[in-house]
Image 1 (cartoon, rainbow, N blue to C red):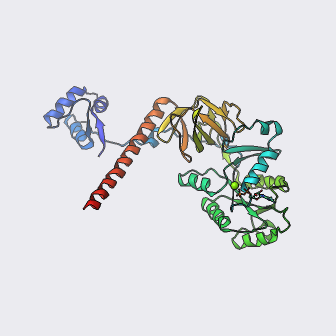
Image 2 (spheres, rainbow, N blue to C red; image 1 turned 180 degrees about the vertical axis):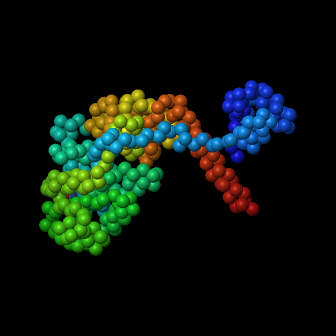
Image 3 (tube, protein in one colour; image 1 turned 30 degrees about the vertical axis):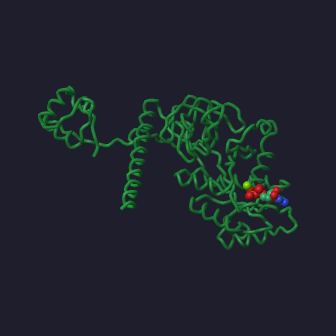
Length: 368
Ligand code: GDP
Ligand code: MG
């Protein structure tokens, strides 16, 4: 069951701790002042003083402050886009082409290292691209309960058509409830057959608007750049319908999309802000560690002091490398952050002990 520290109980009951230890002794319970007693004993003890003791387990949910977003504080946020599709259909090429052609020259030149996501500014609005194509990133993040993608660009090569991973991508997107915009790629190739791709996708329920369906299609070439502007416009159009909003005024909630141990800089992670604004100096908890935002860089490697909803930033200020998919939550103070990190550590330890005991049981059985 749950245990209560004697000192804590004494404080709550307004009775000296050594007086409680004495009473416990009279009740036949041997305990010293630094120990804990179980909930039942605490209740019996309370009864001795005519005090009703209610033991309630405090979870981190009780401790993390809740914020009600006022409707007027909700502001539009840029869509976060993931590129998916069958191997060799041009996901990487498309992401590269967009990065090279759509990020202002001086900024593109400033990109010293890839942080796992980048921003594209169009006259109609901003888009954020997750820079790791493929289904793995998507499913790893989703498996950890993090949904970072608002729109999927499904890349299908016009010379190859629908392939197993095309279908997989459709299934993942549907399961996540994320809308799909189709990019029929490699239309520069002589054997490109976009009409065939359309009919194949239509059979899978991805029906182009021009055929009365609800999906936007765009023919593109990641090689020549043809159709890319139009593709981005379609994605923004799709995003408009989603009415994506967040509250930049609240403390940040982020998701780790990449993390590593850097030889010179220690543990660094790229996070995407999902709600609120992340600021330099913010105290946070992520996984079972807590930390403080020591420095923060945008996607072109410039130092920034804050980052609002949908914005990817690289962070320093961890004590260990966090895991992709973990939520990073900003808390009002270090004491609370430590308390929550400790609770999580304790939980982790309990889980590990349980796993270990399972292992030793199987060991015993295998010996028998
Ligand atoms: P991924 O596996 O989906 O990331 O595919 P890649 O981007 O690595 O592309 C696979 C191959 O297709 C590479 O050799 C690319 O140069 C080529 N490729 C990608 N896009 C196009 C395109 O639009 N036109 C042509 N002709 N080749 C392309
Ligand atoms: Mg690739």
